[in-house]
Length: 434
Image (spheres, rainbow, N blue to C red):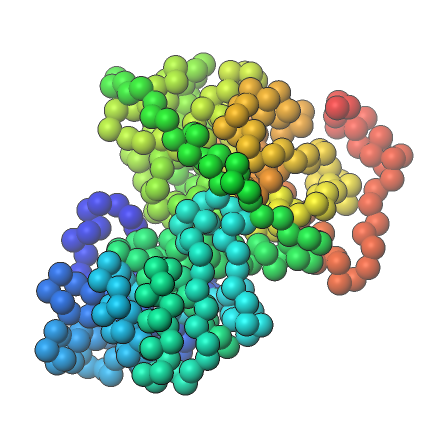
């Protein structure tokens, strides 16, 4: 579901279908579960239908409820229409609503709990405090009243006891971002809980990204060279692939690739990673950003690394859920599990989230082509590569290793490779000691 400005002209039915396709395809709801709606400028509510396959919705399946109460469409509206209408009546700022049953959030709901979004600065900024609505019969006015009471407190995400979650926003794109971010947060908490105590972000960490928001100077680029054109296509392809593989969420993750010297391409702020177009990537030259675009908050950090390490050609900041679970816990991500993990990742250290804004040069010193991966506490992973493929491959290996380590907890103790095996690997693959 794109956040491109030209998408604002899409018909409400198309917006709902695009979002439901993504939610269903990523198993964040079931064939019969969940419902989406939006309130248009004329006062009509557009909502998904009752008892229709969510994996195959068509434009004509969406139902319109006119301001006078007339229902237009070939199906009945969702049985949860009452709480959608009560939320719109309670919160005039909300124009879009998502209700679904993503597995991590449902786990919280059936335990009577809600995820703490202070797990990540971006989750806190996007979702804020989460409300909790006590159980009431699905489709009933009582459920609508229970949910509306929570939204009346000013929250935009509400857990439903033994039911799921409801998220609202002023635009459908923002509602989807909140929904996806909240499910990612819940999933990370569940994964990290297997490892031990989960750590949340203090005030210094929550403000870290704001310190990176200082605008860059702009410049007007000349004609794109052949390498820039190739990198724009390859970089956007890898970003979209990363989203499909759930290595990042729709508006998170910073990928960059060096064009030459002090010039590189990087993902823009706020764009939908699932539909990133090569033209949206931002060219950075000598610390200035391409005119008319807003580069990722990580731009200064990426530049510091490129300046420190001439052989680095690509950098990835991403939050794959299993690796990120290690970043929010005290547990060390031990790569001495299979040869590929140790050779590709080496030792994976952790850096405090505050270092991203306070000392980019220190990050550039700690990361290097020989030790190309670090976890950032309450943020995710940072990966370097000698090419885009090299960086992406390392990101995949990192997430696979982290997932295997978490899954192994139910089987017993991990048998890590001993010093002799590690020494043989270092000799065979010419790996330097730290």
